[in-house]
Image (cartoon, rainbow, N blue to C red; front, side, top):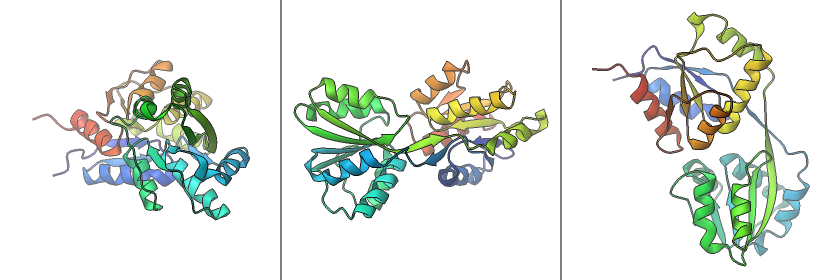
Length: 257
């Protein structure tokens, strides 16, 4: 039985990735509002990634920190007609694992917690003297390369894409927050970038987040980003996955018995 009936929930993730979250919310009776605060763009140049791919088989580990990184890798690997892979592949979590499996990659390592700190910790025993190719966003934190380098690894970073702010989202947010009757009951944040960019968009529109809207964070790094702007997350998913985020929303918003 739907338990989020009449709840309006703002989804801030990229438009092409929002459907899964929207479908899960709709199944619970909620009304998803799709206003992306990030969109995926090519890197300033593919040269570092392409250079790394030409010697792909020489790396001991290939590391992906997002599904978008897998998709960008696949695009460039097809462009170069690459067939040989490193000995081992690591990914940051279930969504990235699915993306890797979907293009035929066999993954050797998924960390127990789906954050960069946990992935770095899981890779440390493999680090001394080994070479790692880390494929990531231009804006990614340096948690993984710094930890691996300190442990004696040789790390190559290849930026595969950029997160940027969709300019057309400003008018949509202005309309959404123009009157209290339009306010969502909750806002979901699935990455630190979605949080930072929403605040930036609202500031551009000369608006702030109204009180009494539940701020739903997918994990500790996203929560930290909200706090940097002075907003305390109302809830944080138990693990950094969409189903866990939905469950946290359900626990918070469903009517009490």
